[in-house]
Image (cartoon, rainbow, N blue to C red; front, side):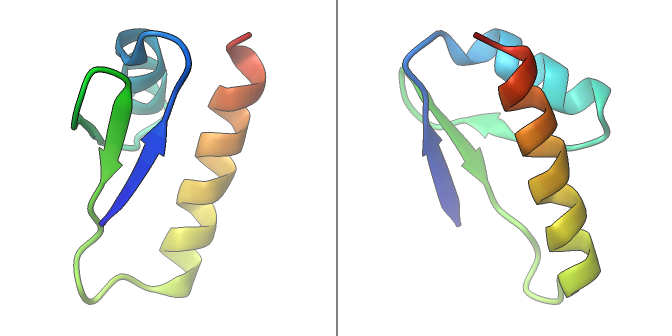
Length: 60
């Protein structure tokens, strides 16, 4: 389990992740929880990181 703490409201961030095929949930006021399955492959992790980086660059 990984949490990403944001300095802005996570609602927009989560929606953009979902639009890019990455499902996450809220964990606290400004934390997004990422919980991959135990059998996740490196290729899938790399893809998720690319999606997160893309969305981070879109939100300022």
